[in-house]
Amino acid sequence: MELLPPRSEMERAFLASDRSYNGLFFTGVRTTGIFCLPSCPAKKPRLENIEFFGTVKDALFAGYRPCKRCRPTEASAPGWVNGLLAKLEGNPGARIPEAALRQMGLEPARVRRYFLREYGMSFQAYCRALRLGRAFERIRAGGDLDDAVFDSGFDSHSGFRTAFARVFGKAPGQTREGDYIRLTWLDTPIGPMVAGATDAAVCLLEFTDRRMIEAQFATLSHRFRLPPAPGENGHLRRLRTELEEYFAGKRREFTGPIAYPGSPFEQEVWRGLLRIPYGETRSYEDLAAAVGRPGACRAVGRANGMNRIAILIPCHRVVNKDGGLCGYGGGLWRKRILLDMERTGKPVAGLNAQ
Image (tube, rainbow, N blue to C red; front, side, top):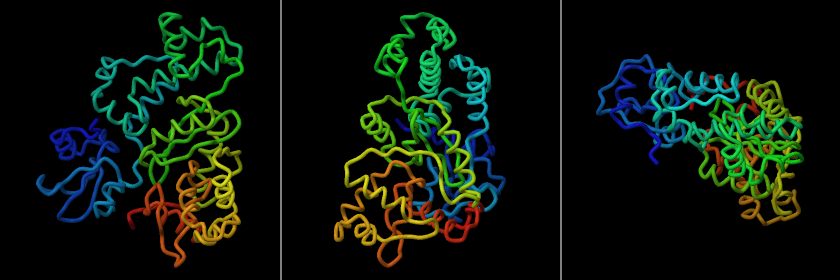
């Protein structure tokens, strides 16, 4: 499905400096080589001189530089997204159909496109999964099933049971001792990320624009034999706080538990990554020697690329033998920013130098 709005809609939003489209697309100006947010206050160019991108990465890969006025690389979610999420947080059982979105001044297609791109699911699917995740927590804590059903916005037990089994793979009554992978989405200075955690540990931290993010969810579910659904727990709250401190230049180590199942070789490589100190780098050759597999640089590189917990397991600290940057799932521009921040100790801000 095409997740960008129709070009005519983007042109109207750009010419009107419509802030509600921030984060939904970015505008590249061919005559200046700059890309902007839809709300940018700079003088508008001729429409034939602009092109549209769905992500910061796409604009950067096309050779554009971020605008110094609107700072598109630092853009957080549009205000209407935060408003919707706050509404759901304040009323866990809320159902927000398309008619209600229109009453709020939001076009359902725009909302659907944004959530599909950033969350990997439609807004309605996100709401439903969020309600079911909260019902899971309530039932597991010993709550009454009837309360869980109706407080989750379902009209009947049968509808609730069907939806619950579709997400969690089991009946509500079988979840008393169960667990699931809670997924939450985080804003960072270098783009949105999705984090996942079980009862025991953080098990996922990825940039949402990384290719095959949905496949990552499937792999994670298979590895842990647990279903993923939107949710929150103490590990994710601590991660959110520590990431903010890290990007502010105030934290060098993360304290929460992490879980990273994989093959014995993959796990050894990931443990090797964890031993690379903040502010330092290692080559693939160095890492291969450190894990007792000298010469296995290609295998080490593949394991490095399979890391599912970015930043915490610092795969960005691996560089070429000559010190040059090499592949990074989140994009080389992010890798450079992370390494520069760790080297200098300065917070990530003013990314318009990219």
